[in-house]
Length: 273
Length: 268
Picture (cartoon, rainbow over the protein chains, first blue to last red):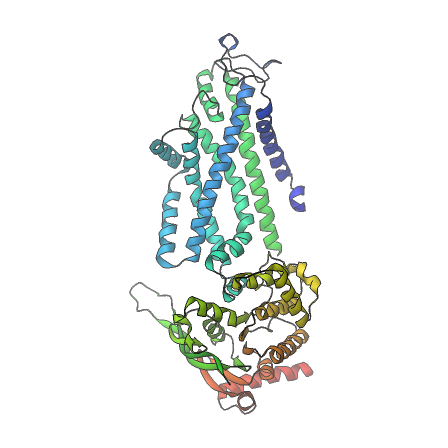
């Protein structure tokens, strides 16, 4: 951990993510304006003391809308990655501890899922399931399964022939207990790293879906939706796309930096050990 | 003497990788028709160079690997056709002490957690206080201090770790302990201590050992009965003194000569 604290990129990642999480937390207690109330008299205003980031084409406060959408972004990021990680871990662990047909079947299914480009798979699922928040969560969750399945598969495969697992078998530990009590704790650090890195990715996909009109639906705010709406004003009022763009970059960059730094520190620790 | 564990004509064949698709599948016999009996309170030694199939034999009789053919019997019952209760009894009755003690302990668990785990798994009436009492008592028997319980495997020495592993094997009051190269990874002085400890514990608990090693000196010290293995086959077997002091097979003679010549070098 001490090495992580000295890693500047890790600290930067933590700062960026805390900014977004802080913004989200504040949004539950205080919003400068109602994010969904339109005010046609105050359309497309530049930043001022009253409206810190200006107003959009319907006269809604951009800062308030950004704050409210951070809830969706973090919620979708956390929940969808949790779904993907849980199912992926389960499939990977089962496949790695099985033999022959079950192993082949499970992993070829995962390979098939992995062959689809992420956003295409998510779009396809949303097209089948219908638009909306929960379907977006589910679609992104399903998209996340292969990454975690592959990772846990290779980690379990690597660990399952270790002597401590053989020892556990020799005193009669059941397969379920070996997976949950012996293997999972050992592979957890790597899974957590992947988890953090995947949240950034999930938020990006959520924004893309919303941008295409398949995720969060108007009048609710989402960074992707705000970016999409700003397109009409690219020439007349380009500033409209800046706040949601920047907050998206901050969030995704933050999570990815944390994931990378933790991963690097673990690779170093492995090399040292 | 009662026979506890018995191997009958066990064979283990591994598939060799095919060079091309239509080639006939070829096998390598890692273990070739081996039979022996482990008797109550006795130590049976298996000696041979690396790759002779010793470890495969140990894993087959401890049911960590399935034999290609042949049977393993525990108190006369085939372990392949046992009921669940009988199998659990077998699992408790046959324990392992592995070659690299540190790797055989869960790296993320403390020694205490490592030692409590077998009791948790095998006892339906698990109670932490009672279990801890048992663990501390056994620690005393393997000459370890209680303070070791809070440490992780990475924080203790190899000799200490092997004592922990022996304590873990003894916790379930086994009838047989399979020692697979259990002193090979340790310093010579520690080796002697561990061997002495195993002998003392055998007198106290009446456990049988299957003692597997490439080290003829250690096997000579520990065993009542010896089997010499090479390329999956038993070349010579019999009472320890008979086999190791008056070997008949040329392979056994070479094995003994090579190990003795090293010891002589060390003296010089």
